[in-house]
Amino acid sequence: MDEKLKCIESGFEQDLSGLKSISECESIRIKYLGRKGLIAELFQELAALPAEQKPLFGPRINALKNKLQQEITRKSAMFEQQPELQAGGLTAQFDITLPAVRGQLGAGHPLSLVLDEICGLFIEMGFCVVEGPEIETEYYNFEALNIPLEHPSRESFDTFYLHKKYLLRSHTSPVQVRYMEKHEPPIQIVVPGKVYRPDATDASHSFMFNQVEGLLVDKNITLAHLKGVLSVFAKKLFGPKIKTRFRPHFFPFTEPSAEMDVSCIICGGKGCRVCKQSGWLEILGSGMVHPKVLKAVKIDSKEYSGFAFGMGVERIAMLKYGVDDIRLFFENDLRFLKQFG
Image 1: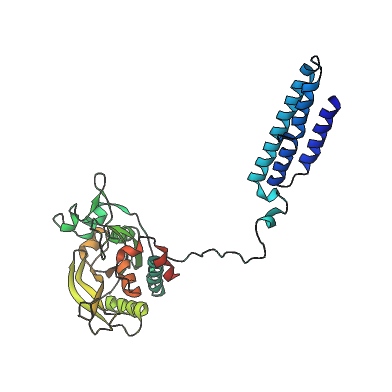
Image 2: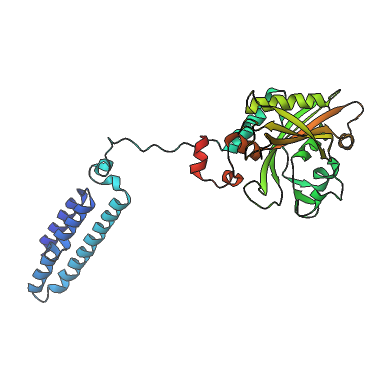
């Protein structure tokens, strides 16, 4: 009996070292621990031994059985956790000659594409890009821009107010004020960034959207310079055939003020549903910087003048790509976004 125990243990260790798969583990288990396996034969022989020898060999047979079970379980778990250890390695599960599945490449978001294009066009005309904080004070968002206390835009239904006098900026114009405080003319900047207004979300409105504002301050700047810069910008953005027009408007921080329209890029100015049969689409607001704004940043309005303008990036993107719902830009639907890759 002693020789059989040693022989079975030695044979098991040899078989265990040659295992190459989970299926072979099962074969070894049946060979040694099955109902008709070698351990079962030892228990049958134990029953035939004299009574005084049973206490000697019984515990040894049980200990060997437990050891074999633990080793087989450990080996099986190793193959399950690291399938590449099985016979044939990865080729046992995969055909390495098959073509690989190509991963999807990312692409620029349509708003990022338009924002980069807008800023790029102004950089070509000598402007530099400046950014600023999205959390602002009432002073920079309103007072320094000549927006009076009674102005509707200062009400809570038009502005996201935070703690005390802090708020989420409702336009990027505060950055212009901050820049003029620290830099002397000539100044020629564009300011891209997110702005926030508590608007109900629908096909043409969002509580968060992107703006690009521009500012040019120097000696002898006139409205003709404003019209020239923005007309060149529109033709570069929408094509050389685009037409522009300026309509009188009112903004507290510019005087005189104007909105700029472009001929409808959908119908070519003939009139359609998009332009409401007018043949024109409004794309931005503009005007000559108000003397009070220059005074607030200690720039002499008698020596210097300037113009400013601002546009919504989402509106430009909707016109440029023919998108009829602003919400599509923020829903992260790959079926929509991959069209711009």
